[in-house]
Image (cartoon, rainbow, N blue to C red; front, top):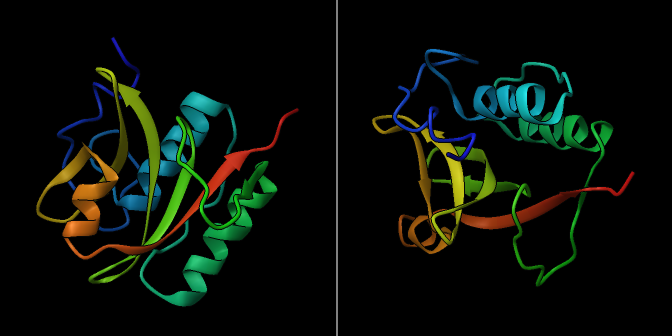
Length: 133
C-alpha cells in the first residue's frame, strides 16, 4: 500500500496541517516531516509573498527548481497558480500512474493527473526536485 493512501479523502481545513485535515501547504509540510524527515515552517498560501516563502522553504529543505520543459517525477514538489492563487502539491507514483497529491477546498486531499489540473485552470507549473545528497 502506498504511503499516501491514508491521506486521500482527508478534508480541507483552512490553515490545517494534519493529521485530520489539511490545506495545500499543510499537506506538503506533513509529507516533508513524515515521509522525508524534514520539518519546515507553516506558511499561509494564497498570496505571492507566501508563494515566495514556500519556494524558500523548499530550497532550504534541499529541493531545487527544474528548468523549463522538465518532466515531473515521483516526489517532485509542484508549485502552480490556481483559480484562487498559488497552490502546491507533490508528485506520487500510484497504480502505475504519476499523480499530483494535493489538497483543495470542496474536495480535500486528492491525487490527480496534471492534465486534469490544467483542464481545471491551474497553470504556471514549476517542478522542484530534491537535490542528491
